[in-house]
Each structure stands twice: as structure tokens, then as C-alpha cells.
Length: 84
Image (cartoon, rainbow, N blue to C red; front, side, top):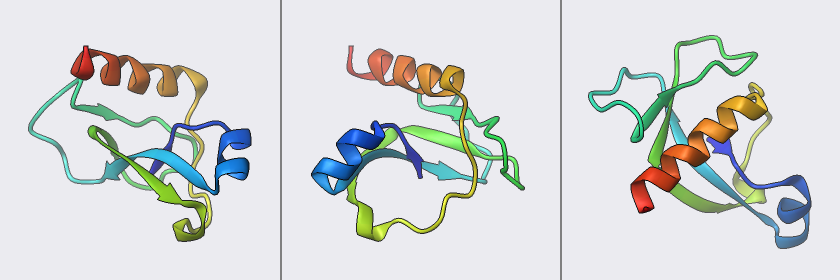
């Protein structure tokens, strides 16, 4: 999961807003998927922008990688393209 919501929101609500991640090469390109350049990933990975969800913080494991602000902005741009 790529967490999009701010830490303050996550702490106060007990939830996170996230998009799914996959290591399987997608058929569709941007805005539905975006290759991740997050520091710490050991496999080539993609954010599945069309698969946004809200999850309890209790369902999260440890952080595996950290996306840059630029990458997060691209994911949000993709969301904006999808929902208009």
C-alpha cells in the first residue's frame, strides 16, 4: 500500500487513505498505474491509482519504503485525472 494521507489524519482518525501496490507489470499506464521509485523497494513496483481505499492503521505492517513528495504528487494527479 502507498499511504497518501498525512500523519496527523492517520493518528487522529485511526485510518489511512492508500492506493494498492503491485510488483506485476500492469497493462494500463498512467493515470491508472504509476511505476514507483520509492526508496527501499526491492522489486520493481507500481501504484494502482484506481484502487484507492481507506484502511485501519491496525491493518498496516512495517514500512517497507518511502515515496518522494514528487511521486505522491503524481499519484494525486492521476487520481484527479480519473475522477475529473
